[in-house]
Structure formats: structure tokens, C-alpha cells
Image 1 (cartoon, one colour):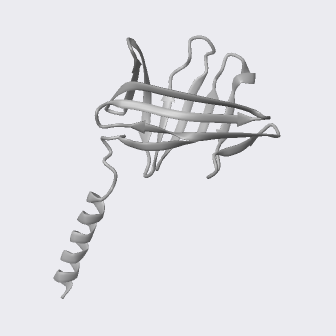
Image 2 (cartoon, rainbow, N blue to C red):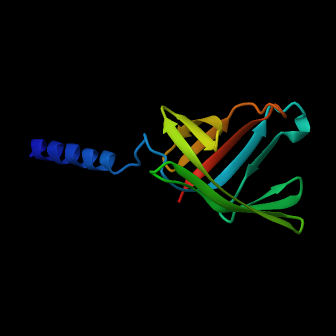
Length: 147
């Protein structure tokens, strides 16, 4: 009887392991749940915004809301549409570019202009960290939640 339980346990572990998200793939639809700008040349540009389930947060007493999604396809397309709103101001931005993902590095290209970032995968999230910006010195990190 113990061998049967051990066999069932091993099969269950294999099934559970095979049902997880493919760690070599970041294909999917995501929403931004955290946005951080750090190590900026001007410390006033440093920020950290953690958005709630409604896409809103409070920053310095001001409600800031961000709605929209980022979509990464198997064919190497990345696209998104976002609406940012605060203090009665609303702006919508859309984009569509190409990307490659290999060995934890995401490279996004808009024509011949490419930028690479480091990706850390969680269970239902990915963290994307862009290196220091030439103009501001800021390191930009986004945490995306799989939808």
C-alpha cells in the first residue's frame, strides 16, 4: 500500500509541475501593478507606485490611476494601451513594437531603436528592470501581473 501512495504522490507532483507557466516564456496579457523610478540624478524624480486591484494608488496625497494592459505574443509583438489619470487630467497612450526574450533579457525594438531590460519571473508576475536612462540616470522597474 505504501508503494501505491508513493507512486500517486510522484504522479501528482509531476502533474502539478507540468501545469505551471513556462519559465522560458513571457507570452501573455499583463497589467502594471508596480512602477518604480530609482537612482535618478534628480532625487525628486525617484518614485514608487503600487497600484491596487482597481489600478489606483495615492502618491503625495494625490490619487493616480493607471488602467490598461501589455500583451506579449508568441510571434514577438508587444503592444499595450494605457490610460493615466490624476487631478482631472487623463491621457491615453498606445504602442506596438517587437520584442525578443532570451535568458532573462527582454529586448524591445521600435524600428531600429532597441532597449534591453532584465526580467525576473514570479509565479504570476514578471519584473522588468530597464538600466539607467541616459537623460535622467533613472532605473525604471515595472512589475506586471499575468491576467
